[in-house]
Length: 67
Image (cartoon, rainbow, N blue to C red; front, side, top):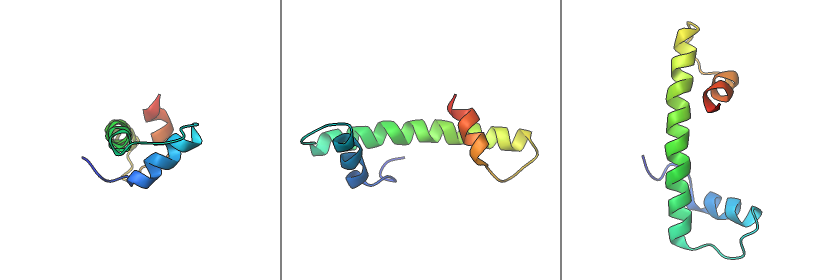
């Protein structure tokens, strides 16, 4: 999965963290890492919601899956 999150958002995150300049490569690398993490959290959240007998993923499923 690649390209779901906008590169502009990656630049904004890095600049908010204190970066003065951000290369295109850095934006792509951060996006790849964050999308991979999001996919793992999403898959775990789906398991949690199914275990609870729900089809809907709730915010608490995401929070639990992230830990």
